[in-house]
Image 1 (cartoon, rainbow, N blue to C red):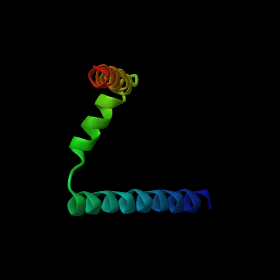
Image 2 (spheres, one colour; image 1 turned 30 degrees about the vertical axis):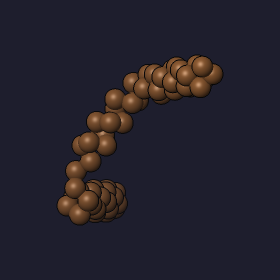
Image 3 (cartoon, rainbow, N blue to C red; image 1 turned 45 degrees about the vertical axis):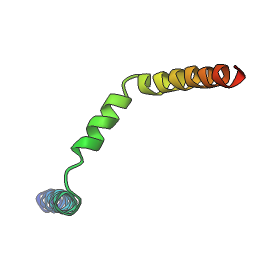
Length: 71
């Protein structure tokens, strides 16, 4: 009896793996690889450094614009 239960579960999980593989490969075929997006995400995700540098540059740019406009 337990053999049938284990075989059923094994077939079920193999079917899920097969279905997800087909879904992944089809989306990759239709939409192409996402290497560029993944690379960009990994670079930005590094401790939020990209966000902080952009914020810092934005502040400097705003200060510069204020100085230019005031003269």
